Image 1: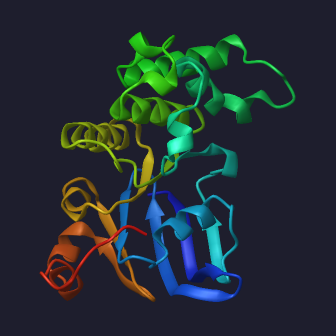
Image 2: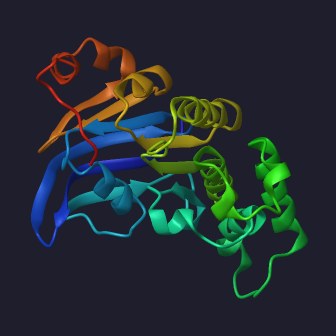
Length: 240
């Protein structure tokens, strides 16, 4: 197997204040890692650090398998401002190809084909000329997922991708992401507040607290004391 990401003794936080420490894990090409944990445990901070939007307080993060930073696709938590963005669905998806353009101020034919193919893969070609702000929440997330796919063929990071979606749209999003991992070999790292979905779709679980509480295959996670305590009525679960 090709290891794409390794964290060695990593501590995360803000302005020197540690949120979580002693992160030690590695994932291989095609793994589906779901990151879970209590409120404030550093789940979203981990995603931002992997994207090099933040620096770790200590430790090392290594990328392998020839993975470049610009080859990582990212689907962030969506804000109300983003939901009201005045552009067509195709324009949003195409913007995922920006890193491919270099100094060119325009998209070429190849990039337009990539955008079209990703929209086709997600079943949203019929939305290409529609204004993004007028789409449903589920449609918007599909557009953003197609955009993220334009930036990668190797690794996709998703931060609470189903927040605000109804149950049906949430299920569709989870299944789309899992399908891409299976069929396209894309490595998935997803932050999720939905532990049942994490267990259903993920191959590996990373559970964060003030330090790393668990990393391993989901089958082992389901047998762990950490999982049992987390799912107990008093365990609680909130977003990062």
